[in-house]
Image 1 (cartoon, rainbow, N blue to C red):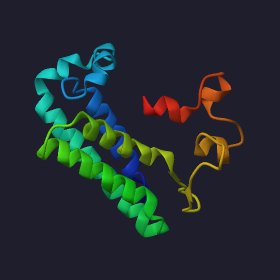
Image 2 (cartoon, rainbow, N blue to C red):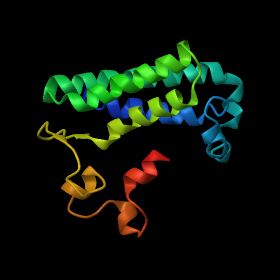
Image 3 (cartoon, rainbow, N blue to C red):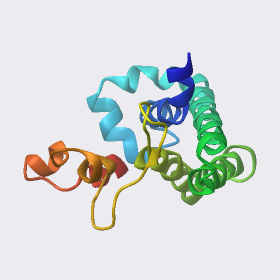
Length: 157
């Protein structure tokens, strides 16, 4: 249970991305990805998928708050709160693609940081590195190994 609590921000971020891809009407940028993954059939359940998206965003925010209580680093939590606010504005205020995609991008930025389960440290990339994997791992991240761009650029798509 403790491991799941430590991963709430990552579970929430990935879940929000998957739900966004499954809702191509509200996220037109993901229409091609959604159809290629066979998620077009979820179109008739789009209202439920949008509630799932919001739930995952809140789950991510709860995970960031949990990480803040452990590490006392406010940056990820502030970014998550601003992102959740942008999403809430989009869903309950006035529809705005800037707020929608900005909020989603902010929620996904939670993956930029890594909460070490072994020592409890909050890791972030060193200056000049694209991700925590490249900074703290013994080898560069898989996209760089394959001669592609950095893994954080692939994540932002």
